[in-house]
Amino acid sequence: MAKSNYKISASTKSEAKSTAILEGAMKEFLAHGYAATSMDRVAKEAGVSKATVYSHFGDKENLFSAMIQNLVQDKFQMIMDLQQPELLEQDPKIVINNLASKILKNVQKNQDVQNLMRIIISESGRFPELAKAYVHNLAKPAINAIIQYFRSQSHLQIEDPEATARVMVGTLVYYVMLQEMLYGKDVLPLESDRVINTLSDLITRNHNSSQL
Image 1: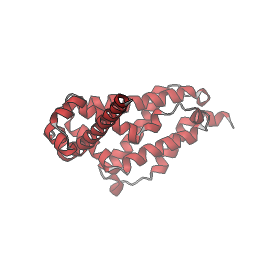
Image 2: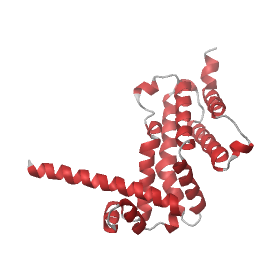
Image 3: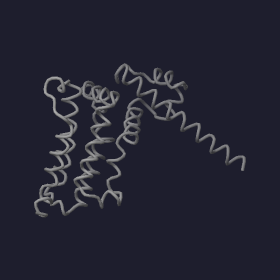
Image 4: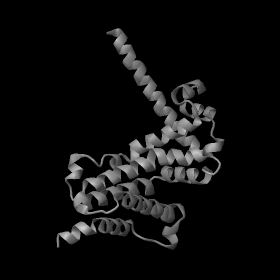
């Protein structure tokens, strides 16, 4: 029994270190960018040894990918849970509205997410693995989850679920980039509710027409 308790304790400590490392990595990447962030910096911020950082994540590229995965679980899990029975049974317009609202809220109200997007865009030319990590860990699973949801809602009569999912995600991402990251809200303001309602109306229009 003592041996079992030790294993649980060791596992808990390892989890705590992983969490500390990911939090430290986020702070360092946001403060210094990808190129200037070293494993030494991350280790110091996390309060662990550099060897511990390497043993948990291997290298800086893997650490960055793990950080995005952690961000997905923290901020965007609703997208990945679209196949839950209760969501599949809800009015699609409500689901789409709630999903779009959640995405915009998590990005608009979170400066760290916006700054991370800036880093990925600005440094992806020199470090294409940054963009690939973002696409692989966030964009691709999010788009695939929305595609699966659209396919499960055959009554929506969406001719091209994949293209529709990309239009939806692209519209939301561009809205955040223009309004928040490029300060368009000061020059070309537009309420998020109008974008969300227009998106859901466009996606569900065939279904709504058939009910008339």
